[in-house]
Each structure stands twice: as C-alpha cells, then as structure tokens.
Image (spheres, rainbow, N blue to C red):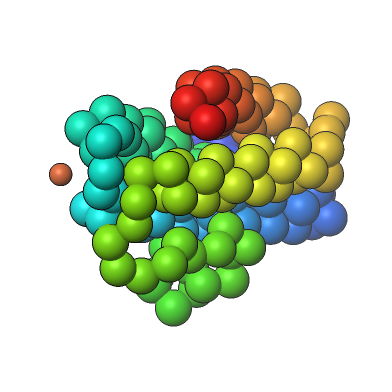
Length: 155
Ligand SMILES: [Fe+2]
C-alpha cells in the first residue's frame, strides 16, 4: 500500500482539473492586482467607502488564491503564479491613472462579473470529476457573486 496518497483520477480528469484550477489562479491573481490599482486610484465623493471595499475584496481574493494553488499541489500538480502568465487572464486591466468613483465602480463590477462567469463555466468543466475541487470552486463562486451583488447595488 502506498502511504503517500495522491488522488489519481485518470490523466484526462487530472488535465481538466489542472486547467480549471490554473486558469482560476491566474484570474484571481489578475483581479487582485486590479483591485489594488482601483484602491489606490479611486477619487470622488465615494472615495472612502470604495477605497476600503476594494481592499476588503482583495483580502478575500488572496485567501482564495492560496486555496486554489494549494488544491493543485494537493492533487500533485505544480501551481504557476508568475507575473508574465497572469496576462493570459481575460479579466481586463482598468485604465491607468486616477479614476472617478463611479467609473471605477462600473469597471470593477464588469471585472467581477467576468470573473463570476469564468468560475461558473469552469466549474461546469470539472462537474463530477472531483467533488472536493468542485466544492472549492463553489465556495469561490458564492463569495464572488456575493461581492458582485454588493458592488452592483451601489450603481
Ligand atoms: Fe491601502
């Protein structure tokens, strides 16, 4: 009996799980950078609440980044979180420079919506392949959709 258990779900399933987790990792890293950019550059009457809210979401993202990367390692796969690969994410950067509060809020709602859509699509890809990974994806979806509601409600 092998005492060093690593789940072997077959090469096809492992490839799907790797793709889904890796792509999710890139999206979360990209989104985390965008949130800091927004945190620093927001200006206007709603500065205070948005400045703080963007950092709160960033903290949640950082927690999920680690959970996703370490799910890859738990499955015996190496996570890649290096800068040059983050640009493959379809979570688009926001405009450079200072931004008015309403403009930056709209931009962040759009990015959060894109992330929520990506998560839903990816969870569909790994449906029934690995319940724990599905649960992880669901927990991220729940959090992102909650944050999206709170952002959207301010427009
Ligand atoms: Fe700060």
